[in-house]
Amino acid sequence: MKSKQPSHLRSIVAHVVLIILSFMCLFFFYILIVNATRSHADLQKGFSALPGSYLFKNLSNVANDGTFPMIRGILNSLIVSGCSAAICTYFSALTAYGLYAYDFKLKKVAFTFIMAILVMPTQVTAMGFLRLITNMGMYDSLLPLIIPSIASPSVFYFMYSYLQSSLPLSLVEASRIDGCGEFRTFNRIVLPIMKPAIAVQAIFSFVGSWNNYFVPALVIQSKDKMTVPILIATLRGADYMNFDMGKIYTMILVAIVPIIIVYLCLSKFIIAGVTLGGVKE
Amino acid sequence: MKQKNKKIDYSKWGYYFILPFFISFFIFSFIPLVDTIRYSFFEYYRSGIKEVGPNFVGMANYVSLLGSDMLKYAANTMILWIIGFIPQIVIALVLAEWFVDARLKIHGTQFFKVVIYLPNLIMASAFAMLFFTMFSTNGPVNGILMSIGLISKPIDFLGSVIGTRSLVGFMNFLMWFGNSTIMLMAAIMGISPDIFEASDLDGCNSFQRFFYITLPQIRPILAYTLITAIIGGLQMFDVPQILTNGQGSPDRTSMTLIMFLNSHLKSKNYGMAGALSVYLFIVSGILCFFVYRMTNNDDPDGSKAAAKKAKKLAKKQGRG
Image 1 (cartoon, rainbow over the protein chains, first blue to last red):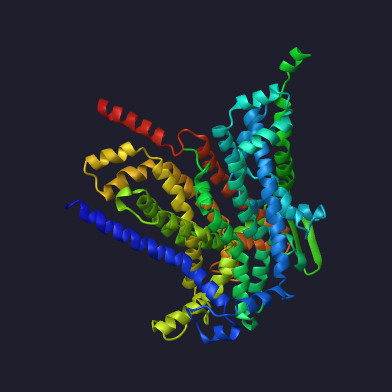
Image 2 (cartoon, rainbow over the protein chains, first blue to last red; image 1 turned 90 degrees about the vertical axis):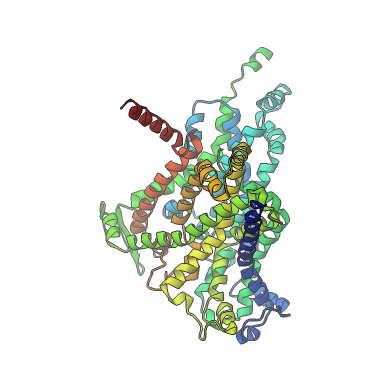
């Protein structure tokens, strides 16, 4: 009996700590949601724990604001994130398959090289990148936010680990004997096998690109090409005291809600994906 | 014909398949890197509408950076990182241990995991903007504190050094502790249950179990988490940038290295930005090397080498 008592106590402590931490995580979103449903005048009066009825008015205010084209921003963000996620996962899978299934002279060199730059921050080349795309005439366009994601070392590494664990090379042999071309083999046989890995990485690269602020802020100039994070940043830079606070909260809400909805639908899948291929054990 | 087919050399397909990756890397990362390094040796900036340079000045940019506030910003970055990272790793370790421990019978594990991972996916800039409005002098946090009666007049969180730094640290903590928890949990679940069972039989209590079994067993992943967190900390930008509107206020005490780089890039001071990038490149290159060693080595944290050394030492002492 004596040994059971402390374990019981520890269990209570664990639950209390977990509840406090969860409260911390959710509290801010709660305030955000409540404040997004209240008008500017209500917000000035002070905080209230109960939501108001102003959400749709706030939403239409945000949608009709010419200085902060939020709908356009969301559209731009969707284009950039969607395209990046698609080409990033496809080409990473292609690269991983190329290095996994074929033997060639530079195989080892190529693999070592990618592993060496696995966690290299993109910021260190930002200056040259900015000059390069200016010279290429791609300054202030969405393309430089999409195309470079073809080379994503960490996604490659994930795909490579996945291939190692789930693609027997005999399958490739078999499709060769059946007269299937190499590229066709990849698209018709290897890609379907890699679906789970591609789905996980597509989500993560979509989120990463949706939230990315540093590079877009350097590249994008004109208002109609801004992505959501840049719009939020300009909101901070503007004279915010004269703003409709309800609108500000609603804009923040609109910026993060799409991701939260996707996350809640796929949470089990995403959490399982965090650790997959993260570290070799 | 058939005979010939059998001997087809497929190796060229390997090159074709990895070509897009390397072309993209070459154009969008390698050329920029070379360009960045090249201009770090030039005086090249814009003042007003006049462009000065590029004139070759050798190491002058590097030297003048060392004389500027760069080291102060490096210290800022480190302080902001530590304020967030220490609670992050401690709480992540404790939570991971709790989640795995069946004796605690934690209810709703999945719910807690979903909730603590949630902030990791939130747009950092929107999160920073949210904190800015909430912790402003007439924001909801001050409102709540005053209505409870804890304070009589609003606290100016963003006006004080400690307030701003703690807010940045707190946000980083909130955004990353869930991610670390899940990583470390996977590591702990990878430990053979036999070891835990044996320790139970030997009458190990939970503290002993944690310090003598769990911690040493997950050392490689702990080291990996640490290094990747340092690299992440080096890149700290979104949160302090938006929270302080790029000023690093008050008095640039929350200005990070990447914010410094960003301000040079915005003002088109390419020479200085180049030199700063090279400094960052060297530091992250060293860190990348550690990650490379960990992901490609059978002996990721040098524990085996250490064990060998200890054995040798023991032998020596035994003889002596």
